[in-house]
Length: 530
Picture 1 (cartoon, rainbow, N blue to C red):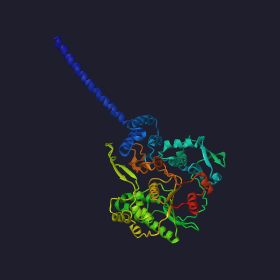
Picture 2 (cartoon, rainbow, N blue to C red):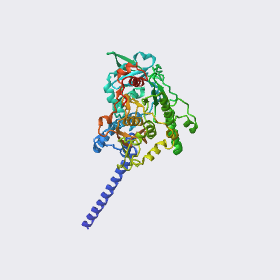
Picture 3 (spheres, one colour):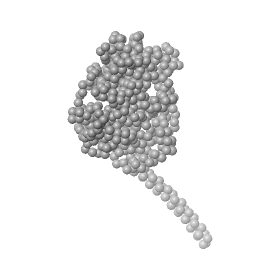
Picture 4 (cartoon, one colour):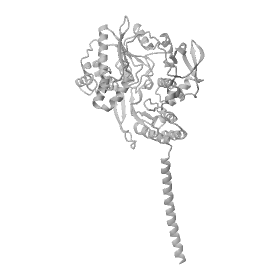
Protein backbone atom coordinates (compact mmCIF):
# COMPACT_ATOMS: atom_id res chain seq x y z
CA UNK A 1 0.00 0.00 0.00
CA UNK A 2 2.81 2.35 0.82
CA UNK A 3 4.56 1.39 -2.36
CA UNK A 4 1.36 1.97 -4.31
CA UNK A 5 0.83 5.40 -2.77
CA UNK A 6 4.45 6.35 -3.45
CA UNK A 7 4.06 5.32 -7.06
CA UNK A 8 0.90 7.41 -7.38
CA UNK A 9 2.74 10.46 -6.01
CA UNK A 10 5.52 10.00 -8.52
CA UNK A 11 2.97 9.79 -11.30
CA UNK A 12 1.23 12.96 -10.01
CA UNK A 13 4.56 14.80 -9.75
CA UNK A 14 5.47 13.85 -13.31
CA UNK A 15 2.12 15.01 -14.58
CA UNK A 16 2.44 18.27 -12.62
CA UNK A 17 5.93 18.87 -13.97
CA UNK A 18 4.74 18.28 -17.53
CA UNK A 19 1.84 20.68 -16.98
CA UNK A 20 4.16 23.25 -15.43
CA UNK A 21 6.66 22.92 -18.29
CA UNK A 22 3.89 23.35 -20.84
CA UNK A 23 2.62 26.42 -18.99
CA UNK A 24 6.12 27.94 -18.97
CA UNK A 25 6.45 27.35 -22.71
CA UNK A 26 3.07 29.01 -23.34
CA UNK A 27 4.06 31.92 -21.10
CA UNK A 28 7.34 32.34 -22.97
CA UNK A 29 5.53 32.37 -26.30
CA UNK A 30 3.02 34.89 -24.96
CA UNK A 31 5.82 37.13 -23.72
CA UNK A 32 7.61 36.84 -27.06
CA UNK A 33 4.47 37.67 -29.02
CA UNK A 34 3.72 40.55 -26.65
CA UNK A 35 7.30 41.76 -27.14
CA UNK A 36 6.84 41.64 -30.89
CA UNK A 37 3.60 43.60 -30.63
CA UNK A 38 5.37 46.23 -28.53
CA UNK A 39 8.56 46.19 -30.58
CA UNK A 40 10.26 49.51 -31.15
CA UNK A 41 8.61 50.72 -34.40
CA UNK A 42 11.91 52.05 -35.67
CA UNK A 43 13.53 48.63 -35.24
CA UNK A 44 10.55 47.16 -37.10
CA UNK A 45 11.21 49.58 -39.96
CA UNK A 46 14.90 48.67 -39.97
CA UNK A 47 13.99 44.98 -40.19
CA UNK A 48 11.60 45.79 -43.03
CA UNK A 49 14.28 47.75 -44.88
CA UNK A 50 16.80 44.91 -44.52
CA UNK A 51 14.22 42.39 -45.75
CA UNK A 52 13.44 44.53 -48.79
CA UNK A 53 17.14 45.05 -49.43
CA UNK A 54 17.98 41.35 -49.52
CA UNK A 55 14.99 40.54 -51.72
CA UNK A 56 15.31 43.40 -54.22
CA UNK A 57 18.93 44.57 -54.46
CA UNK A 58 21.14 42.71 -56.97
CA UNK A 59 24.06 42.41 -54.54
CA UNK A 60 23.22 43.45 -50.97
CA UNK A 61 26.13 41.66 -49.29
CA UNK A 62 29.45 42.20 -51.09
CA UNK A 63 30.17 45.79 -50.01
CA UNK A 64 29.50 44.85 -46.39
CA UNK A 65 32.13 42.12 -46.56
CA UNK A 66 29.79 39.21 -47.27
CA UNK A 67 26.56 37.88 -45.80
CA UNK A 68 27.92 37.23 -42.32
CA UNK A 69 29.39 40.73 -42.02
CA UNK A 70 26.17 42.19 -43.42
CA UNK A 71 24.20 40.77 -40.51
CA UNK A 72 26.94 41.65 -38.03
CA UNK A 73 26.62 45.29 -39.13
CA UNK A 74 22.83 44.98 -38.94
CA UNK A 75 23.13 43.97 -35.28
CA UNK A 76 25.50 46.88 -34.61
CA UNK A 77 23.03 49.33 -36.16
CA UNK A 78 20.13 47.86 -34.17
CA UNK A 79 21.82 49.13 -31.01
CA UNK A 80 21.98 52.63 -32.53
CA UNK A 81 18.37 52.55 -33.72
CA UNK A 82 17.14 51.57 -30.25
CA UNK A 83 18.20 55.08 -29.16
CA UNK A 84 16.47 56.86 -32.06
CA UNK A 85 13.63 59.20 -31.06
CA UNK A 86 12.40 60.69 -34.36
CA UNK A 87 11.84 59.86 -38.03
CA UNK A 88 14.61 62.30 -38.89
CA UNK A 89 17.13 60.40 -36.74
CA UNK A 90 15.86 57.12 -38.16
CA UNK A 91 16.46 58.27 -41.73
CA UNK A 92 19.95 59.35 -40.69
CA UNK A 93 20.78 55.91 -39.25
CA UNK A 94 19.24 54.02 -42.15
CA UNK A 95 21.18 56.04 -44.71
CA UNK A 96 24.36 55.50 -42.76
CA UNK A 97 23.72 51.76 -42.98
CA UNK A 98 22.91 52.00 -46.72
CA UNK A 99 25.89 54.25 -47.48
CA UNK A 100 28.14 51.18 -47.21
CA UNK A 101 26.62 50.03 -50.51
CA UNK A 102 27.98 53.10 -52.33
CA UNK A 103 24.79 53.06 -54.41
CA UNK A 104 23.24 56.35 -55.48
CA UNK A 105 19.93 54.67 -56.35
CA UNK A 106 19.45 53.11 -52.88
CA UNK A 107 18.53 55.54 -50.12
CA UNK A 108 15.92 56.76 -47.64
CA UNK A 109 14.55 60.27 -48.13
CA UNK A 110 14.74 62.58 -45.14
CA UNK A 111 11.41 63.88 -43.79
CA UNK A 112 10.90 67.56 -44.43
CA UNK A 113 10.66 70.09 -41.65
CA UNK A 114 8.40 72.73 -43.22
CA UNK A 115 9.59 75.49 -40.88
CA UNK A 116 13.31 74.92 -41.24
CA UNK A 117 13.15 73.85 -44.89
CA UNK A 118 12.21 77.45 -45.75
CA UNK A 119 15.46 78.67 -44.21
CA UNK A 120 17.93 78.51 -47.07
CA UNK A 121 21.61 79.29 -47.47
CA UNK A 122 21.96 82.64 -49.30
CA UNK A 123 24.87 81.17 -51.28
CA UNK A 124 24.95 78.97 -54.38
CA UNK A 125 27.85 76.55 -53.97
CA UNK A 126 29.41 74.77 -56.92
CA UNK A 127 31.98 72.00 -57.32
CA UNK A 128 34.78 72.28 -59.83
CA UNK A 129 37.04 69.38 -60.69
CA UNK A 130 39.14 70.08 -57.59
CA UNK A 131 37.40 72.68 -55.39
CA UNK A 132 34.17 73.87 -53.81
CA UNK A 133 33.44 77.56 -54.38
CA UNK A 134 30.70 80.20 -54.21
CA UNK A 135 29.06 80.37 -57.64
CA UNK A 136 26.46 82.98 -56.75
CA UNK A 137 24.94 84.68 -53.69
CA UNK A 138 22.41 87.15 -52.40
CA UNK A 139 23.38 90.83 -52.66
CA UNK A 140 24.71 90.82 -49.08
CA UNK A 141 27.38 88.26 -49.96
CA UNK A 142 27.95 89.12 -53.65
CA UNK A 143 31.52 90.27 -52.99
CA UNK A 144 32.44 86.67 -52.11
CA UNK A 145 31.41 85.08 -55.43
CA UNK A 146 34.21 82.88 -56.75
CA UNK A 147 35.95 82.31 -53.42
CA UNK A 148 36.96 78.76 -52.52
CA UNK A 149 35.63 77.01 -49.41
CA UNK A 150 38.31 75.58 -47.11
CA UNK A 151 36.21 74.76 -44.03
CA UNK A 152 32.83 75.36 -42.39
CA UNK A 153 32.44 75.77 -38.63
CA UNK A 154 36.05 74.67 -38.18
CA UNK A 155 35.44 71.40 -40.04
CA UNK A 156 37.86 71.02 -43.00
CA UNK A 157 36.29 70.41 -46.40
CA UNK A 158 37.78 66.90 -46.64
CA UNK A 159 36.13 65.93 -43.34
CA UNK A 160 32.81 67.39 -44.48
CA UNK A 161 32.99 65.26 -47.62
CA UNK A 162 33.78 62.17 -45.56
CA UNK A 163 30.88 62.82 -43.20
CA UNK A 164 28.52 63.48 -46.12
CA UNK A 165 29.29 59.99 -47.43
CA UNK A 166 27.73 58.63 -44.23
CA UNK A 167 24.54 60.65 -44.78
CA UNK A 168 23.95 59.88 -48.45
CA UNK A 169 25.26 56.99 -50.54
CA UNK A 170 27.80 58.33 -53.06
CA UNK A 171 29.35 56.50 -56.00
CA UNK A 172 32.35 58.81 -56.49
CA UNK A 173 33.81 62.15 -55.39
CA UNK A 174 31.38 64.10 -57.60
CA UNK A 175 28.52 62.42 -55.77
CA UNK A 176 30.06 63.42 -52.46
CA UNK A 177 30.26 67.08 -53.51
CA UNK A 178 26.73 66.96 -54.92
CA UNK A 179 25.37 65.63 -51.62
CA UNK A 180 27.44 68.07 -49.56
CA UNK A 181 26.01 71.03 -51.47
CA UNK A 182 22.42 69.88 -51.12
CA UNK A 183 22.91 69.13 -47.41
CA UNK A 184 24.16 72.67 -46.77
CA UNK A 185 21.36 74.21 -48.82
CA UNK A 186 18.81 74.30 -45.99
CA UNK A 187 19.15 74.81 -42.26
CA UNK A 188 17.21 71.62 -41.55
CA UNK A 189 19.49 69.35 -43.56
CA UNK A 190 22.68 71.14 -42.47
CA UNK A 191 22.04 69.84 -38.95
CA UNK A 192 22.84 66.39 -40.30
CA UNK A 193 26.35 67.56 -40.97
CA UNK A 194 27.16 70.27 -38.44
CA UNK A 195 26.26 71.10 -34.87
CA UNK A 196 23.12 73.31 -34.80
CA UNK A 197 24.04 76.98 -34.70
CA UNK A 198 22.63 80.36 -35.64
CA UNK A 199 25.12 80.75 -38.47
CA UNK A 200 27.77 79.01 -40.54
CA UNK A 201 31.33 80.27 -40.39
CA UNK A 202 33.13 79.74 -43.70
CA UNK A 203 36.88 79.93 -44.15
CA UNK A 204 37.35 81.17 -47.70
CA UNK A 205 40.38 81.51 -49.93
CA UNK A 206 40.89 84.15 -52.59
CA UNK A 207 44.15 85.09 -54.30
CA UNK A 208 46.00 82.86 -51.81
CA UNK A 209 44.55 84.87 -48.91
CA UNK A 210 42.14 83.40 -46.39
CA UNK A 211 39.42 85.03 -44.31
CA UNK A 212 36.23 84.05 -42.46
CA UNK A 213 32.66 84.76 -43.47
CA UNK A 214 29.66 84.35 -41.16
CA UNK A 215 26.48 83.41 -43.01
CA UNK A 216 22.97 83.05 -41.59
CA UNK A 217 20.19 80.98 -43.13
CA UNK A 218 17.31 83.10 -44.42
CA UNK A 219 13.68 82.53 -45.36
CA UNK A 220 13.75 82.14 -49.15
CA UNK A 221 16.77 84.38 -49.84
CA UNK A 222 16.94 86.23 -53.14
CA UNK A 223 19.99 85.08 -55.09
CA UNK A 224 21.06 87.83 -57.49
CA UNK A 225 20.66 87.42 -61.23
CA UNK A 226 24.06 87.77 -62.86
CA UNK A 227 24.26 88.45 -66.56
CA UNK A 228 25.87 85.69 -68.59
CA UNK A 229 28.27 86.39 -71.41
CA UNK A 230 26.10 84.09 -73.51
CA UNK A 231 22.52 84.84 -74.43
CA UNK A 232 21.18 81.32 -74.97
CA UNK A 233 17.62 80.97 -76.17
CA UNK A 234 15.72 78.68 -73.78
CA UNK A 235 12.01 78.69 -74.46
CA UNK A 236 10.69 75.89 -72.26
CA UNK A 237 13.31 74.77 -69.70
CA UNK A 238 13.20 71.03 -70.43
CA UNK A 239 14.51 70.70 -73.97
CA UNK A 240 15.87 73.67 -75.93
CA UNK A 241 18.21 74.26 -78.85
CA UNK A 242 20.00 77.21 -80.39
CA UNK A 243 22.79 78.14 -82.79
CA UNK A 244 25.72 79.77 -80.97
CA UNK A 245 28.83 81.59 -82.11
CA UNK A 246 29.55 84.46 -84.44
CA UNK A 247 32.11 83.33 -86.98
CA UNK A 248 32.00 79.60 -86.22
CA UNK A 249 28.41 78.46 -85.94
CA UNK A 250 27.82 75.81 -83.28
CA UNK A 251 24.69 73.78 -82.58
CA UNK A 252 23.55 73.73 -78.97
CA UNK A 253 21.11 71.30 -77.31
CA UNK A 254 20.13 71.78 -73.67
CA UNK A 255 18.33 68.76 -72.17
CA UNK A 256 17.54 68.93 -68.46
CA UNK A 257 15.88 65.52 -68.06
CA UNK A 258 15.84 62.43 -70.28
CA UNK A 259 12.15 62.92 -70.88
CA UNK A 260 9.93 64.21 -73.70
CA UNK A 261 6.39 64.10 -75.09
CA UNK A 262 7.01 60.68 -76.63
CA UNK A 263 7.33 59.12 -73.16
CA UNK A 264 4.20 60.88 -71.88
CA UNK A 265 2.12 59.83 -74.88
CA UNK A 266 3.19 56.21 -74.51
CA UNK A 267 2.42 56.26 -70.78
CA UNK A 268 -0.99 57.89 -71.37
CA UNK A 269 -1.89 55.16 -73.84
CA UNK A 270 -0.57 52.13 -71.96
CA UNK A 271 -0.69 53.06 -68.25
CA UNK A 272 -2.88 56.18 -67.93
CA UNK A 273 -2.79 55.97 -64.14
CA UNK A 274 0.96 56.75 -64.24
CA UNK A 275 0.81 59.80 -66.49
CA UNK A 276 0.20 62.18 -63.57
CA UNK A 277 3.63 61.37 -62.12
CA UNK A 278 5.25 61.81 -65.53
CA UNK A 279 3.55 65.18 -66.00
CA UNK A 280 4.63 66.33 -62.55
CA UNK A 281 8.16 65.39 -63.49
CA UNK A 282 8.01 67.21 -66.85
CA UNK A 283 6.42 70.38 -65.49
CA UNK A 284 9.04 70.68 -62.76
CA UNK A 285 11.28 71.83 -65.64
CA UNK A 286 8.87 73.53 -68.04
CA UNK A 287 8.42 77.29 -67.91
CA UNK A 288 4.67 76.85 -68.32
CA UNK A 289 1.55 76.36 -66.23
CA UNK A 290 0.22 72.81 -66.30
CA UNK A 291 -3.31 72.41 -67.71
CA UNK A 292 -5.67 70.24 -65.66
CA UNK A 293 -6.56 68.09 -68.67
CA UNK A 294 -3.73 65.50 -69.07
CA UNK A 295 -4.06 65.37 -72.86
CA UNK A 296 -3.68 69.15 -73.08
CA UNK A 297 -0.77 69.11 -70.64
CA UNK A 298 1.03 66.48 -72.72
CA UNK A 299 0.78 68.62 -75.86
CA UNK A 300 2.82 71.41 -74.24
CA UNK A 301 5.79 69.09 -73.63
CA UNK A 302 8.41 69.26 -76.41
CA UNK A 303 8.92 66.31 -78.78
CA UNK A 304 12.55 65.14 -78.60
CA UNK A 305 12.90 63.92 -82.17
CA UNK A 306 11.14 66.99 -83.60
CA UNK A 307 13.34 69.41 -81.65
CA UNK A 308 16.51 67.58 -82.68
CA UNK A 309 15.40 67.43 -86.32
CA UNK A 310 14.93 71.21 -86.30
CA UNK A 311 18.36 71.70 -84.70
CA UNK A 312 20.07 69.44 -87.26
CA UNK A 313 18.38 71.30 -90.13
CA UNK A 314 19.56 74.64 -88.72
CA UNK A 315 23.10 73.25 -88.32
CA UNK A 316 23.16 71.97 -91.92
CA UNK A 317 21.94 75.36 -93.12
CA UNK A 318 24.71 77.13 -91.17
CA UNK A 319 27.26 74.47 -92.20
CA UNK A 320 27.99 73.86 -88.53
CA UNK A 321 30.47 71.08 -87.76
CA UNK A 322 30.09 71.16 -83.98
CA UNK A 323 27.31 70.26 -81.57
CA UNK A 324 27.30 71.06 -77.83
CA UNK A 325 24.99 68.79 -75.81
CA UNK A 326 24.38 70.31 -72.39
CA UNK A 327 23.58 67.72 -69.69
CA UNK A 328 24.83 69.75 -66.72
CA UNK A 329 21.40 69.87 -65.07
CA UNK A 330 20.16 66.46 -66.20
CA UNK A 331 19.80 63.93 -63.37
CA UNK A 332 18.33 61.19 -65.55
CA UNK A 333 15.06 59.86 -66.85
CA UNK A 334 14.02 57.30 -69.45
CA UNK A 335 17.03 55.71 -71.19
CA UNK A 336 15.05 53.86 -73.96
CA UNK A 337 14.14 57.12 -75.75
CA UNK A 338 17.83 57.70 -76.52
CA UNK A 339 18.22 54.99 -79.20
CA UNK A 340 16.39 56.79 -82.06
CA UNK A 341 18.27 59.99 -81.16
CA UNK A 342 21.61 58.18 -81.47
CA UNK A 343 20.51 56.95 -84.89
CA UNK A 344 19.71 60.53 -85.93
CA UNK A 345 23.21 61.59 -84.84
CA UNK A 346 25.28 58.64 -86.09
CA UNK A 347 23.16 56.96 -88.76
CA UNK A 348 23.92 53.37 -89.71
CA UNK A 349 26.97 53.26 -87.44
CA UNK A 350 24.59 53.12 -84.48
CA UNK A 351 22.60 50.26 -86.05
CA UNK A 352 25.71 48.05 -86.10
CA UNK A 353 27.33 49.19 -82.87
CA UNK A 354 28.03 47.04 -79.81
CA UNK A 355 28.44 49.21 -76.70
CA UNK A 356 29.97 46.28 -74.75
CA UNK A 357 27.83 47.22 -71.76
CA UNK A 358 26.45 44.53 -69.47
CA UNK A 359 23.12 44.96 -67.67
CA UNK A 360 22.16 42.49 -64.95
CA UNK A 361 18.68 42.66 -63.45
CA UNK A 362 17.41 40.99 -60.28
CA UNK A 363 14.14 39.27 -61.13
CA UNK A 364 13.22 37.64 -57.81
CA UNK A 365 12.69 40.70 -55.66
CA UNK A 366 8.92 41.10 -55.52
CA UNK A 367 8.18 38.47 -52.87
CA UNK A 368 9.52 39.45 -49.45
CA UNK A 369 9.39 35.81 -48.36
CA UNK A 370 11.72 34.79 -51.18
CA UNK A 371 15.32 35.89 -50.82
CA UNK A 372 16.66 33.69 -53.61
CA UNK A 373 18.89 35.31 -56.22
CA UNK A 374 17.81 35.03 -59.85
CA UNK A 375 18.96 37.33 -62.63
CA UNK A 376 18.44 38.21 -66.25
CA UNK A 377 21.66 38.95 -68.10
CA UNK A 378 21.46 41.44 -70.92
CA UNK A 379 23.13 44.48 -72.38
CA UNK A 380 22.68 48.22 -72.08
CA UNK A 381 22.17 50.39 -75.13
CA UNK A 382 22.07 49.66 -78.81
CA UNK A 383 20.05 47.15 -80.75
CA UNK A 384 19.96 43.37 -80.93
CA UNK A 385 22.71 42.71 -83.48
CA UNK A 386 21.31 39.24 -84.15
CA UNK A 387 18.27 40.83 -85.78
CA UNK A 388 18.41 41.40 -89.55
CA UNK A 389 19.64 44.86 -90.48
CA UNK A 390 16.25 45.80 -91.96
CA UNK A 391 14.52 45.01 -88.64
CA UNK A 392 17.00 47.14 -86.71
CA UNK A 393 16.41 50.01 -89.12
CA UNK A 394 12.65 49.65 -88.77
CA UNK A 395 12.98 49.55 -84.99
CA UNK A 396 14.71 52.92 -84.67
CA UNK A 397 12.61 54.56 -87.38
CA UNK A 398 9.56 53.66 -85.32
CA UNK A 399 10.65 56.29 -82.78
CA UNK A 400 9.87 55.50 -79.17
CA UNK A 401 7.21 52.76 -79.21
CA UNK A 402 5.73 54.40 -82.31
CA UNK A 403 5.67 57.92 -80.90
CA UNK A 404 7.66 60.62 -82.69
CA UNK A 405 8.37 58.21 -85.54
CA UNK A 406 7.52 60.72 -88.28
CA UNK A 407 10.50 62.89 -87.31
CA UNK A 408 12.93 59.96 -87.18
CA UNK A 409 11.66 58.37 -90.38
CA UNK A 410 11.89 61.59 -92.39
CA UNK A 411 15.17 62.73 -90.88
CA UNK A 412 17.69 63.70 -93.55
CA UNK A 413 21.10 62.83 -92.11
CA UNK A 414 23.21 63.33 -95.23
CA UNK A 415 26.13 65.61 -94.39
CA UNK A 416 25.25 65.68 -90.70
CA UNK A 417 28.36 64.37 -88.93
CA UNK A 418 29.11 66.83 -86.13
CA UNK A 419 31.90 66.67 -83.60
CA UNK A 420 30.16 66.62 -80.23
CA UNK A 421 31.09 68.23 -76.93
CA UNK A 422 29.07 66.88 -73.99
CA UNK A 423 28.82 69.11 -70.92
CA UNK A 424 28.53 67.29 -67.59
CA UNK A 425 28.47 68.17 -63.89
CA UNK A 426 27.91 66.33 -60.59
CA UNK A 427 24.16 66.71 -61.26
CA UNK A 428 24.48 64.54 -64.39
CA UNK A 429 23.20 61.11 -63.37
CA UNK A 430 21.54 57.84 -64.39
CA UNK A 431 20.02 58.06 -67.91
CA UNK A 432 21.93 61.30 -68.60
CA UNK A 433 25.12 59.40 -67.81
CA UNK A 434 24.01 56.65 -70.21
CA UNK A 435 23.58 59.23 -72.98
CA UNK A 436 27.08 60.58 -72.26
CA UNK A 437 28.54 57.07 -72.29
CA UNK A 438 26.82 56.14 -75.58
CA UNK A 439 28.02 59.30 -77.32
CA UNK A 440 31.56 58.77 -76.09
CA UNK A 441 31.64 55.13 -77.21
CA UNK A 442 30.29 55.97 -80.66
CA UNK A 443 33.15 58.43 -81.17
CA UNK A 444 33.63 62.08 -82.12
CA UNK A 445 32.40 63.10 -78.67
CA UNK A 446 34.39 64.87 -75.96
CA UNK A 447 33.33 65.49 -72.37
CA UNK A 448 33.77 68.99 -70.91
CA UNK A 449 33.13 70.09 -67.32
CA UNK A 450 33.06 68.14 -64.06
CA UNK A 451 32.55 64.37 -63.82
CA UNK A 452 29.08 62.89 -63.38
CA UNK A 453 28.20 61.54 -59.95
CA UNK A 454 27.08 58.30 -61.65
CA UNK A 455 29.55 55.41 -61.76
CA UNK A 456 29.78 53.25 -64.86
CA UNK A 457 30.13 50.04 -62.88
CA UNK A 458 27.26 50.49 -60.45
CA UNK A 459 23.80 49.52 -59.30
CA UNK A 460 20.86 50.92 -61.26
CA UNK A 461 17.12 51.50 -61.49
CA UNK A 462 14.79 52.27 -58.62
CA UNK A 463 12.24 50.19 -56.74
CA UNK A 464 10.22 52.66 -54.60
CA UNK A 465 9.64 51.65 -50.98
CA UNK A 466 7.65 53.01 -48.02
CA UNK A 467 8.51 51.82 -44.51
CA UNK A 468 5.37 50.77 -42.64
CA UNK A 469 5.81 52.37 -39.21
CA UNK A 470 7.49 55.69 -40.02
CA UNK A 471 6.14 56.04 -43.58
CA UNK A 472 9.62 57.09 -44.67
CA UNK A 473 10.03 56.78 -48.43
CA UNK A 474 13.05 55.56 -50.32
CA UNK A 475 14.40 53.51 -53.17
CA UNK A 476 16.33 50.28 -53.72
CA UNK A 477 18.26 49.38 -56.87
CA UNK A 478 17.23 46.23 -58.69
CA UNK A 479 19.92 46.03 -61.38
CA UNK A 480 23.63 46.37 -61.99
CA UNK A 481 25.49 47.78 -64.97
CA UNK A 482 29.08 47.04 -65.96
CA UNK A 483 30.24 49.54 -68.58
CA UNK A 484 33.99 49.37 -67.97
CA UNK A 485 34.69 45.72 -67.25
CA UNK A 486 38.47 46.03 -67.52
CA UNK A 487 38.87 49.56 -66.16
CA UNK A 488 37.59 49.88 -62.56
CA UNK A 489 38.93 53.44 -62.24
CA UNK A 490 36.96 54.60 -65.27
CA UNK A 491 34.06 52.47 -64.03
CA UNK A 492 33.96 54.61 -60.89
CA UNK A 493 34.43 58.06 -62.43
CA UNK A 494 34.03 58.99 -66.10
CA UNK A 495 36.55 61.80 -66.14
CA UNK A 496 36.01 64.63 -68.63
CA UNK A 497 38.42 64.97 -71.53
CA UNK A 498 38.55 68.66 -70.68
CA UNK A 499 38.00 68.99 -66.90
CA UNK A 500 36.92 72.33 -65.46
CA UNK A 501 39.13 73.36 -62.54
CA UNK A 502 38.54 76.37 -60.32
CA UNK A 503 40.93 78.42 -62.48
CA UNK A 504 38.83 77.64 -65.55
CA UNK A 505 35.71 78.99 -63.86
CA UNK A 506 37.64 82.03 -62.71
CA UNK A 507 38.82 82.66 -66.30
CA UNK A 508 35.15 82.99 -67.28
CA UNK A 509 34.32 85.17 -64.24
CA UNK A 510 32.29 82.35 -62.68
CA UNK A 511 29.68 82.74 -65.42
CA UNK A 512 26.75 80.34 -65.05
CA UNK A 513 27.51 79.18 -68.61
CA UNK A 514 31.24 78.77 -68.04
CA UNK A 515 31.20 75.20 -69.41
CA UNK A 516 29.54 76.38 -72.64
CA UNK A 517 32.10 79.18 -72.94
CA UNK A 518 34.89 76.64 -72.42
CA UNK A 519 33.45 74.42 -75.16
CA UNK A 520 33.26 77.38 -77.55
CA UNK A 521 36.84 78.30 -76.66
CA UNK A 522 37.96 74.76 -77.51
CA UNK A 523 36.13 74.89 -80.83
CA UNK A 524 37.74 78.22 -81.71
CA UNK A 525 41.24 77.02 -80.75
CA UNK A 526 43.32 74.07 -81.85
CA UNK A 527 40.64 71.64 -80.71
CA UNK A 528 41.07 68.23 -82.35
CA UNK A 529 37.90 66.99 -84.03
CA UNK A 530 38.52 63.26 -83.83
